[in-house]
Image 1 (cartoon, one colour):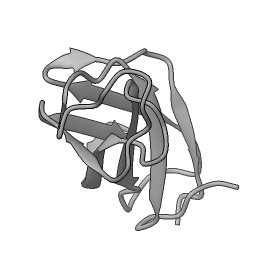
Image 2 (cartoon, helix red, strand yellow; image 1 turned 45 degrees about the vertical axis):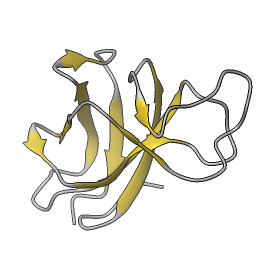
Image 3 (cartoon, rainbow, N blue to C red; image 1 turned 180 degrees about the vertical axis):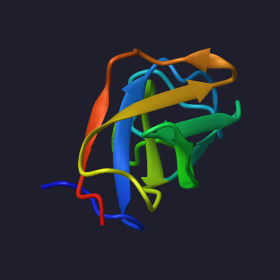
Length: 101
């Protein structure tokens, strides 16, 4: 289902770098662990707020979760999604379905 303006969605990615506290190889995160490097996210070309960037509780280090808020004013359909962490861009060509409301 497409996301509505104001909704928070979870984005999962790898290669985001170090977290605080640091992960331990082969051991799942017991709680949250924030990204050390700053993140920027755009949806449909609009910078958007996020309320968490870090390790996924219960999963092994290396998997990162970013909770981002869908901005208002986007056209309905597939909106380009860009993520940068520490100035390094994630994979290009990623989209997210938005309702345009």
